[in-house]
Amino acid sequence: MSHAPKPNPRHFVTDEKAEDHARILANRLKARYRHLARKFRRAGIEAFRLYDRDIPEVRAVVDWYQGHLVVGEYVRLQTGPQWLPRMARAAGEALNVPADKIYMKRRRTKAEAEPRYPRASAGGKRIVVCERGLKFWVNLGGALDTGLFADHRDTRALVRQIAGGRDFLNLYAYTGAFSCAAAAGGAKSVVTVDRSAAHIQWAKDNMALNNFRGRAYEFVRADVEEYLETLRRSKRRFSLALVDPPSFSKRRGTGTFNVNSHHAQLLTNVLTVMAPGASVIFSTNHQRFDPKLGRLKAKRIVELTAQTVPEDYRNKLIHRCWRIDM
Image (tube, rainbow, N blue to C red; front, side, top):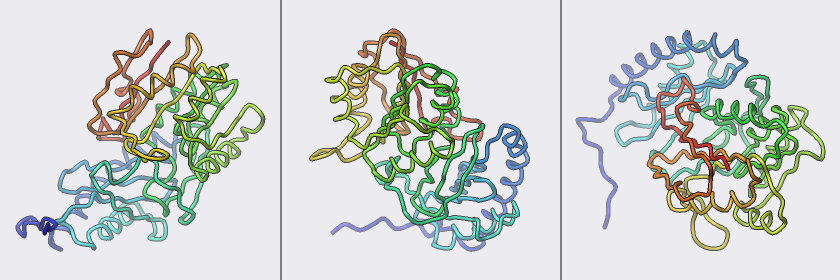
């Protein structure tokens, strides 16, 4: 019979140690807020990371969403159930955020345990946050993720910068933030693809929130790999695509998608629906990603990670990102 590992009593976080952690976190949050808040306010950014496991013994993340806080714990055996509430209280006190605007989430570190794009939640607190002139709905109290990945803030800026006059294909679109960025950048057309009906509706809500309506904006609920085959047969082609697949997901029917094993074939299929001179932005948040891009039929492949991970993220490999030019 197998048993779960037990924490070493010498390493267990006592109440006294938790108080030390709370004090450390509070001091760090005050310093980070002073450093980041004014700069982001001037840039029109209302969602950003204040604490990113900066101090190894305080395994938390704290995100700011327009006066609300999401406090997450990277769960470990050494902490008891009261550790996260204590950190949340410390964060609120440090930044003068009332308890009803603080949300707690427990995160596991095993990659397979939590998909990048979880099932959307109907519950929770839904608010609007701004990012460089765009608006997005976020759900603070529902699923583990809120509907907006702030670590891709600068990737969205890149898409917005290069989207003008292009036909844009957003695959694994989640809540459509990249679709909004492309539309804001003057894309000629935007196709938003996700297999979740809830995510497609969320993407529609985000586009409508930014007054992007009309026949140029198409929403497709479909399995990405099946939809790519449909596009290939139809001979419809695109000049810009965003591909940000989950690290692991169940495929329709049998089997699973693993970005480490399947990204090369996925990108090969994406390139078959791209026009000459097109660009593909590919990203993954797999923490042990092993890129195999050398056999792609592309003119140029450049890693952009150093430019796309924002300054508020201590983990500079929270995602990796490439531009593939045909």
